[in-house]
Length: 450
Image (cartoon, rainbow, N blue to C red; front, side, top):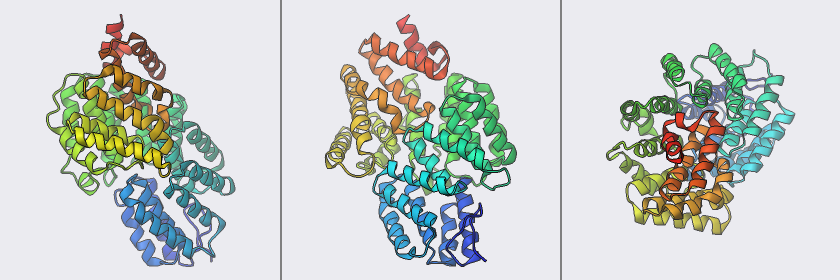
């Protein structure tokens, strides 16, 4: 009897135990379980010659957006190639997607996953990885298209249905379709109260609509379902911090920073102390707080230490400016210079991950961060302004990207450049659908322009 995955797609392993272990690992990934990567060991033990198991191992290495994981991903890729002569077309296509990802060809990976979904619309692994990469490379249009296609083709009986609804929620939130997004997210939570991505998607809707009290209540009401979740739990706490920030409860934001989303003593943080999403949470919130005159003490130091260790790592383009914020805030000028040079070298080599994004956005934004720290706001504006229109391609949500808009706004005000201040205020009003003076990070600029 043939073995199948969660959604009934044929697997090339003859071992029912391996098939069951694969599905357990897939569920761990889809449900953001902290033990997700550890679920690989039983899978590989059940059938060491199962090529797709090694592809999944490679995917899990790449999901960390850490250059230190590349050798392990390449080893998994080589093993998968060697073992997959008799694999299905779908499984061999996953090898192709992993190969492109390891090589830094993200567009190529996206196309392969789209090809898989054309032939096998129920492939939940291709669907979820496509959603992940489309998000982190600024393509909400692709996220929305695949989520809507799956919504038409899948059924509520499938184990991945809550995952689909959560992805549809977030995709439509980023597209500005808030009613569709919230309905999908709430439906997912009704089916799976512990679905972190669905909780996250609805939290984004509430952030974009200025529903801060509702947002706090939403996350507080779901918190009891997050036991065993991975670092996305930290990001949910960061979202709660944003709500308190907009209510000007800045002491509560700092308390959440220390006890929740940047608790250095927690098992999640200690297991993965420099995970990209955690770094983004921490650096962007410290930056926001300092702009409001809050003394954040020595909190930048541990981030700067980790930033120095990650110089030259461009697996996550959006994280790099956050590393630079830490280096600049901690006055690590020599390290910041080395980081800038590593970006120039990466662009000159012209291969590897995110070269075009580093050239067009990451480098000028990082140089602007450093110029701002050195008291050169005019130069910072000149460096960063050409990157503004393409900045969304670095990935990150509207709420996450907002910190880069605030960076430019801060420099424009310091340089007395009213046209640039007006540009950012207009963009903020269009993005959030609310007057800038109603938002903490923009109120001062709106008053300054009045």
